[in-house]
Amino acid sequence: MNAKKWIAGALAAGMLLTTNLMITEAAEMTEKKEAVKVVQTAGRDKLGDFAPDFARYNDDILFGEVWSKNDVLSLHDRSIVTVSALVASGVIDSSLKYHIESAKKNGVTKDEMAEIITQLGFYAGWPKAWAAFNMAKEVYAAP
Image 1 (tube, rainbow, N blue to C red):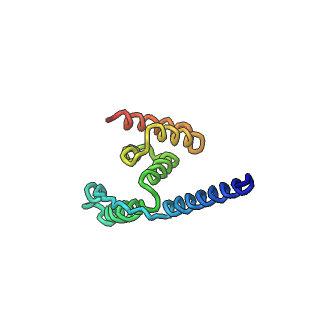
Image 2: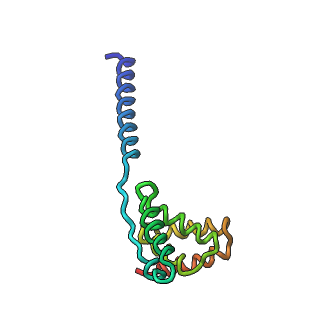
Image 3: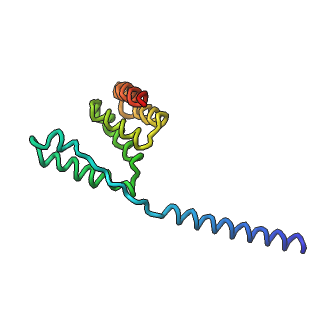
């Protein structure tokens, strides 16, 4: 076999292999993940007697529907969005702590949280980032 035919054959085999890998990767990327139902009772537990509609919206709509669409946006990513929105809005209370704890449970690492809050410091405000760091340090120090 001459060199030109060998090179042409090798290139064709390489292109076929690359095409098969790309098709396999594309199929894996488009596979729909199964959603995990998020169950929340905090609304009913804390406000059920006082504001039953609000409690139902919190538990059934926000968590039961929006957070449960984690086949589209993962719980990890939803946690990042939520923590970012709370910090940017200046909500540095127990709800932020709850969502940082949830982020940790949803796989957001300490290093990721530190990067998220650092980024927020520049866009949402330095004092908000300081407050969020104090809360995140407490959450990530716990086992």
